Length: 530
DNA sequence: CCCTGTTTAGCGTCAC
DNA sequence: GTGACGCTAAACAGGG
Image 1 (spheres, rainbow, N blue to C red):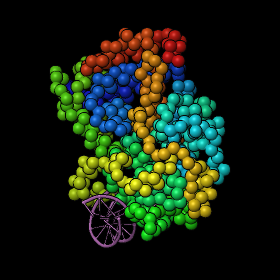
Image 2: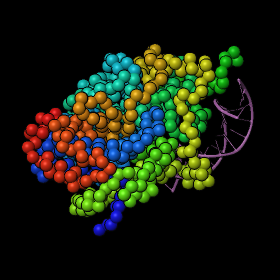
Image 3: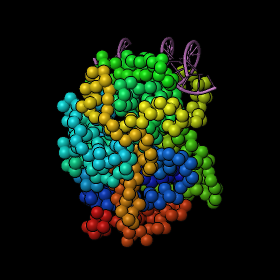
Image 4: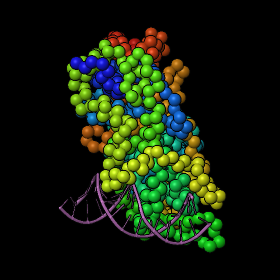
């Protein structure tokens, strides 16, 4: 038995999430039905919510702010993924699922040319039918042909106007039940997610920017602008990605430099897609390899590290980096006993998870450069002030040029223009995405707070499926997290549980007892929940 | 000085 | 194992 603090606070919360999910499975395996499990898991949501609230800390990140909640879910998702084999499919889990995300290899290819869409500010504008190029049909037969996985109409969720979504369909089969609801199988909201690096190659990003431009040619700064506007990751990332963009433009035969005319003001030349390679691009010949599970923005990571410095050291024995959430020894004991009994943390190391959350960027990234030049690592790129999209990247004329850029594509025009060497796009709202809501996509989980019915504090979780055959296990487990966070908390029971985690001490006895208490009359509970 | 553009180098991943 | 591809990093030069 351990004595004293077993895990960091965040690890406790992650472990708790994980444990709760496991408990949900055990309830189910004990004869419960899908909805029963869901109802129980759903009700655990508030426990987590309150735990997260107790961990609240100042969030200095103005755009796409990073909260501990995200961190928790990030690590939880990773932990769940590592241990995904313990959950088996069999439930009809679709009823409560708003959307599932399939982030498979298709997303990493140039298939974005067929599938990519960024929701503009005007949501109804997205609803109209968009023809698919090359006769490809969306996997969701009853979903709009437009690749609008983020379309609120298709996923059944409210979407704040202006909330962009980069979505791609997957080649993999969608989960049963999801399609039946007309939900697209996947959604990755890279536009508001500063945590996960988009799985698009730089060449793809450049192409996207070019396609999104009205012009047949585009400046480098416009490419930067489009990328930062449409991929939140790059807004906060070390600006070295721009070097890669330039490198790609110069090296990739697909891109042709168009020198600026002498009478044209501005700096630098223009770039366009070589028609000779346009078809190859469109056919998806260029792929980006699979991304690491989670690429945490180092800049965000650094800020998180700062934010999570101990703020107070009360009666709890907090170690460095921990914040004011205390787990009483009894709860720790119970937690560990539970984990030991269930074997739930066979492959899960809270410290590892914590490291993943905060300190593993170089490890996760695993690029050669870091190994090659350790001294370069001391550059501490995370410390560099990230370039903001609002920075004066663009000259006046370039601002005018970037104005008509948008993220919604006319695919017919795209095909015609790309193959003919002309890029065009019909007009639309300007590129100036405003992040109005916190959003997060972690491998397997996309979280975007949405407006919830009165009396609820709802967090909308979209679940991304894994790409291969293990999808069912992962989906099951991830959906569990989805349901856990998704359903509203019954108001009539709100009162009685206010004391669970509103203080800085988490009593896991109560937490577990809650699960037992919920094994009662489920029929009444499901009515309340649904 | 900063941005742009080119080039080189090394490494990782993946398909074959 | 090998090659293709992609990414990162860096050096360097030229222009505004």
